[in-house]
Length: 404
Image (tube, rainbow, N blue to C red):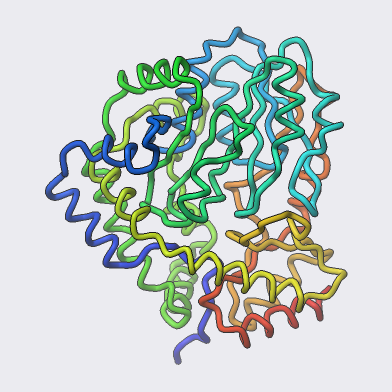
């Protein structure tokens, strides 16, 4: 008997023919693809192509050459590797809590965190929405603090690549689960020419990503993209279960870019330049990007919000220009909600190891991300993307409401 169709929790934003074209680039790597990609995105020359946002962040911290013990303030909800990188450079990660409705830190909360050792502020744009950095950046710049717009999750089209005009550095990611993914790659917009030169010099000393490694990743995902159809995904889930493995763990393992256990190992893994095949693939993905899908994704998310009971908290429901790259809710009985949704054919997930609250640093026990930490206990991620039919999405919302 075939298992009931199961909507995947996230739809990888790349088609088999895009992967096949990328494999062709691996077989015959184009010349000067990195330079062509950077020129395509920025005629002013402000863009640096990187292997990942983490690679670009590492290059930035290296170029800044901060003193041991200097502080980097981070949005309280981010990927743990950002914290690990700060520590790898001998710096102190300082948690800046965020509000559930806006996914944004409050300016007054930021003002309380500044110290004479604060050198960098990194604000993460979460779930494809946009935080207005104007007030936050003004506070930081008044104290000589560099402002980083970590827009790794926010790409919605060419206009978004400009980033916040208040930021000194802007990051965009095109990793596995990101919009317009090239199954890797990132762009860093660095407005200061001197800092940009130092970052380029840092990265020039790194080896180039082995093209065989990129080809292997492409081949793996060519096999995994096909099962994003609900019927095939259900068969994949069943096969994983019969093997005694956990589906969450399997998908996280293949999605994770840098499986390193220590800050030092992480740094070694990410200090590479993107290969020409990856740069050519990202160039093509950006040039052919369908902004209409972002609009459809936004509409699907807004319909979901309207259908959900007010007792269900949607993370980021009050954010401006939200586009629902991910759709996450806070519920009182998350395990019950996940079980109910999977029974209805929706692969909801309790959480994800790629996002977590920034822990309080022993050096700065006054700085905690208490609200963000509380999300972890209640969050459920939902497959609310536009490829899920409206009727199914409504049925998913109704199942959540019954559990709320």
